[in-house]
Length: 233
Image 1 (tube, rainbow, N blue to C red):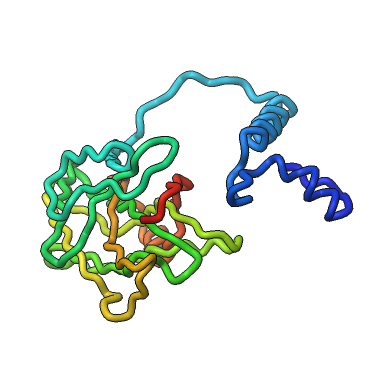
Image 2: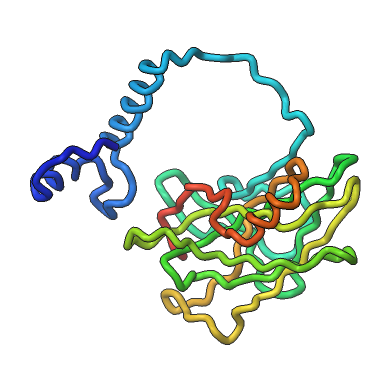
């Protein structure tokens, strides 16, 4: 968005129409139009031409999301529930409410692949969702902790989907993931209720190098999606 130099009071009046009046966080229809025109201007100035020759991914990948539909084609424990309503329809997640709940993932490729999990997160801290430890049934695969917290610092409540790399899958094998609530006893109810960890999908991508994994396995905001729901319950 353009940020004209002006008296702050005039600037607020001039730019208020770019934002949703309910939260001043999301863009209004006019704000989206301003951004679209800005992108178009950049493309025109740089003489970018359209390229329709799309090639397949070199090594292959696989992804699934039940966030918009509730349709999940992998074996799992836990319950698929609609947890929010918005103008775009219901939002769905696989609720992980006990240590017996699980997710079964199969790597269909004949090479190791990186597994990413997508889950609901909220912010600012503390999150309404519990920090969760993911355990794997195959020896040698170390557990990893997921922090479902958004650290976006803009003063507004955010409720979003985040995605995080969790493990490298062996080729052509089935792995079962179990989930442990590591916040038990330390959580604060949100609107009188404790919310379970909520999975919204997964992705299997090409195996990254060691340095890439070390950086991103400890950075919970990497690969974050900006999908947001209007409901918080």
